[in-house]
Length: 87
Image (tube, rainbow, N blue to C red; front, side):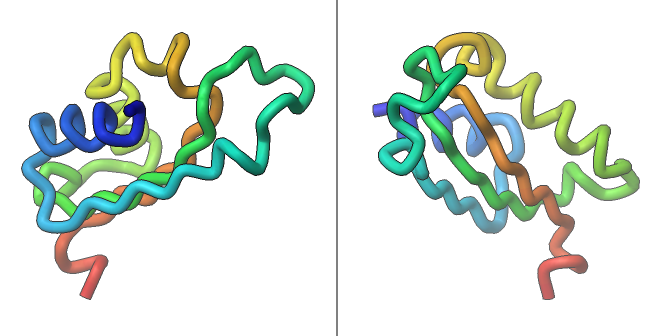
């Protein structure tokens, strides 16, 4: 399952204190432009985001997911926080 694959890749890359993945795919099935990939929202809390801008954090997440962004993921919302931002 794609959500499980996302979780595995993000856990491996960031060793997060918190990871949450919400699958919104069913609400978007068949809409214009969707070629079959899923719609997901991830929330990650990791020390690896310390000192990084929002854009840098998102780039790190996209990097970690790699080829999944081409086929398996059509849309991805990202909440990338440091532990101090999550308290």
